[in-house]
Image (tube, rainbow, N blue to C red):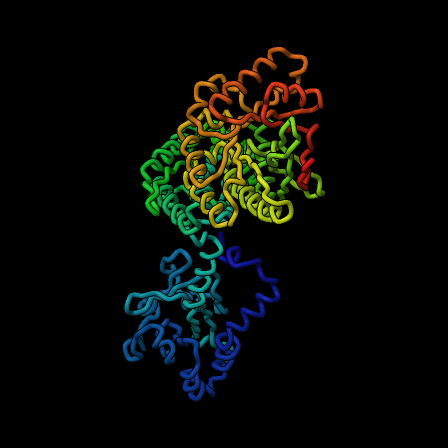
Length: 591
């Protein structure tokens, strides 16, 4: 990237011209024109000692005949030690390549007998060996059309140069990790795509995502999250080659541009980065965090469309890598692009992030009653999403995506906080109100979230006995030890638990006695057609019988008509729930 691009748009030509003339003064406009009037030279030379630009006058044989006080300071050399010497031997000016100019600007001016302006960045070598950045102009001095001498005027631009470089660094780098930022990465990626289109080289892009980063950032705090980002950045930087480019693209996302590499080399690099991450021991506040990454890979060859396409392909490949399990990589192929599920999921992820940030959630309530008396036991909180057009849709449209992309804990925390507030508010209006709420599978295994939930409940002033947490049978049975520990932890402070969708797992009965739940919610597949299906009737009776022996109350879901409700009551089912009893609504329904 050139310096102008780094600091902003290019200035209009007339502005540049005016600025150049301003910088040249007094070098081009004042000094040269006055020196051409030889009768004023003695007084003028004295006056030049007071200006802020360095002035050096040379004879036709490049002999230094005069330098003002500023030139003496700039060169760090006494006048008596330089006057009379050949300019090319006494003064060294470096070009933009940081090499001594083949011909000094003094010599070029003598040869061409015209004003020589600096065309690119130049540096002046001081007598002590240090360098400064300068602007210069060399002007020929004529007397009666005869060239008599040349005048070099130098301006010290070192501070401007440093400020410009600092600004350039800020514009190009991420302030937390000091890696290049997304803007710089995309510029370099665009350059790589242009080169690859000409068939000159093949490159690759790696899209890296830290798995479970949002969980760590939200539970341990942003300071810990920032420290993790810096440590991950350091490991990635150590593992890549000098010719490769690493950048932070987003919150916990990084991009690597691999130069001159094929697909095999790109996959090898991704594997090496994943292995390198296993060496990271990240412990904060006495907690150990297992850090791993997912990497999406896409090749940049002569078939590459554009920068946006490369970024999209790498992002999709990273999503596929996550779907295959954390701590892996995936090389993009056209089959990924054709997979509508992947594209839809990426859209859902972006949409869900917006919904969470804008807090577009709404709580609905559905009553759970005694089928004999009609008395309401509690209300289940059902999460709904409010779309931009104010339409409402159920949470089932995003739960799976939220769990896969580690966003469900955020939603669970919001539901818990909202439920606690609802209990306090509704209890003031209706008396002691009990509310049940669903917890996701990922939350059950999150010990830090368990601690947070306890703190939220105990600090809310809500009686824990008014709270019922619901977890699905499948999530509990897949991690039974974690589920048991989680349930016990919250029951210790007085909360109750319900095992939802019970009966769908073959191992349910064997493990049920190890889970200290208060309610079994019989899965709706056994209830919907219970009037006509003898097998469903037998299943519901069996579940109720076993639950009763374990002193667990039963709740039948999806009760859609009065006949079903009466049959469940006759079977001894403790409680019932469904649209026939009361549809989910924004207000409580007590029948």
